Length: 484
Image (cartoon, rainbow, N blue to C red; front, top):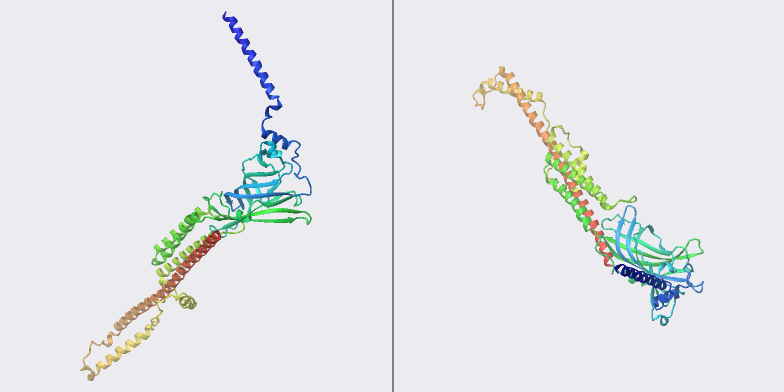
């Protein structure tokens, strides 16, 4: 009993499976299954007999005008070394296709339909500055209106060549062009126009991501037609994207540390010229060298120019080296006074006269006349011996013996002792005069070192103020551009 029931159930299952497969086959082979779909009927109506390889005009003398528009979405990267700009834009283009026209009343008032781009004619408009294919999303559809208006909207990652000027880094303003044109068709076949007015394109920042390193100032647009051989003319639409770098990060990481180190070098001029001052200057020089090694990867590098901030760093390093050299010279002059000759006259004239007047330096240590040179020892001996003899002869005269004398007169036999005493006194006098001369030489060189210290101090301050004012003017000019 159970076996017969099992065979009956198996037969019913096979029969139902056969009927379902037959119904599916009939459904797939039935061409009228989409008969009630308006969009399918409209697509079949538009694409039946459509030639996507032919420009869609009924009169071949009619030019197809392509209206284009773009909006800057983001500035992805700026490669100063390779002179490449990577942007992300929203690109729009519209044109009239005379073969894609229908009456909306015949298709349930459908006035717009999306069709695969590969099934339609699309103008060959490219960007001249393209250097690499970006990672752009694939948008396979376009919108087609009942009047034949085709709308092709898509986002594009644009990698273009741009002439970047980094002289005013990090206060630089860049102007990069995106030139749209037909690569093959002339103006007689394809012309280009703006979808919006130039003023709307210029100040449109509605979709721009304003949180990156670069700030969008404006987008300029200009139409032009050019000819290569003088016969055929090509239409092009140039968009000039003007962007400005935000300098806050580079100001904090590059300028402020350098300024702090230079201020410490300036403060070091107030230290006395000793070995400790030399050590302090050497420490600053080493610290600045390490700082330059750290920031070398941050500075933009090009083969055609050097940014102003790089020149500033080199000048600061040179000032540190000059300051260290001048400090070593002054320390040597101070601690090696007995080995120094007199200051040359040309040094006195240039440093102690002209420079002090030019930079309004108060010369507190005027040069006084040096002590008279030592008198010949023999002359001192003869004068003192003659004086002693004269006193001895006067003392032998009885008339002069009665006069009180303040000291005992040496006898004739004591003349060698007097000569020895006079010799010692003259030697002491020579030593004192020599020491005074060394002191005068030391004062002269100290005055020269003082003036050099003031000159280097003033030049360092002047250099820092000049660079700071230059960058302030660059920042002010950039803000005027953004406001204008």
